[in-house]
Image 1: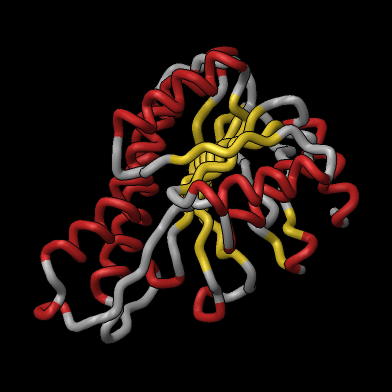
Image 2 (image 1 turned 45 degrees about the vertical axis):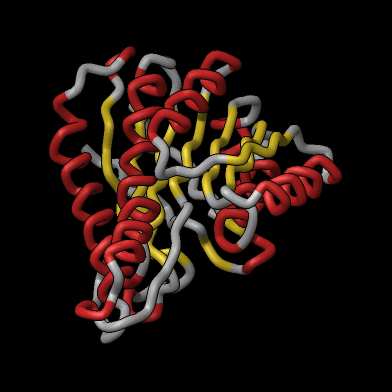
Length: 244
């Protein structure tokens, strides 16, 4: 499927729904926000940095998209839950991207407890908070939707001085596998089923990857379209195998 066909199919799937992207003020998160806007989605640009969130939302609005900047700390479950209540009350959420993350370098025995908890709270608990707040609501929407949890190549390898960061990324990968075990047992509207897809972002081989996409797909068909970040020249996630 070529890029144009892919994007057209994705627009048919998610146009008119809402995309919620955390850490969307810069980097990979801004790329997801741009693609969601290109798909005709309303984009909720979430970031702990209000200035960056507003700049990104303004840039998307300048391209004709409907975008809203939300200042949020994903470590705060109450805040994430309130966001989910507000966003889902306004319309269906087609795509949730749990992308917010921080990094820390240092020897494990020299990392301060404060730095350890900060990285764990953002990179792991932030993903869990997004899943816990949004997925129960997305299940009841009776439409196809997806959750994309962003891990890292650090989930597939280990490196000195990256222990604090990579522990959290391994944990996000494990979290996704538990989703894979648990979601098929849920009864979804219309006979839908929840499936897990793991795809490496940006490169074809894990050892060359910049990030790993952990995609939980809520769907009952096999033709869900992959998304592409065309401006960055690489697939955000590749074609999905939804065979039974």
